[in-house]
Length: 114
Length: 112
Image 1: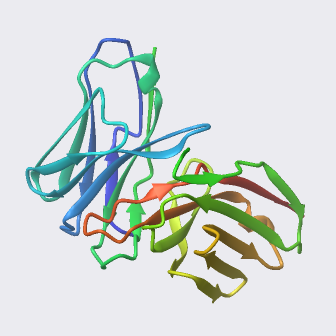
Image 2: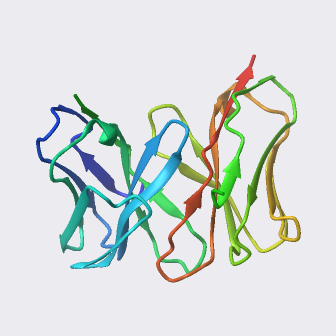
């Protein structure tokens, strides 16, 4: 258990509303990631963080912003949710072992935008 | 062309069968290759990883990488119903940000 908690686990919202998903880790690892998973597309990286206040974009970052003010928390915000952002969102951490790519994933947050 | 291609299946086999799952990739810079297993409504978990070309075995699972043909394989021997899950291949060039590129995943069902 990598100590990753995502909240909320399920959310239904309406188009145009802001949504924030939270990822919390208990082990103070440096690298944290937000992925979305959709049928036909697999897992795609939205944003990632390599330290407090250090973030960078992934391949599908449009419409999303992130913040990391504490090591343990990585927030994903949809400023104005759209139906195309209906997805399952996974947070992941890397323990930092060089090059092994061992990401530990949370249980996912299922978001539905009506 | 997507950097990692994986046939999404679904794949259905009888218990005890040998399962072969495959991916191809396009970026020659990729050096680390992984297989993740994802049960329904759960997050992916690392199953196997290999560095560069070659084979790696762990129990009933064997991961194989052929860098010359940019081909990644996962073999499952004596498949069990508990192996029913989605299997995702992933790769990275080993950069310090540990970003992974995933295939779409193959849904496997092992029937008792």
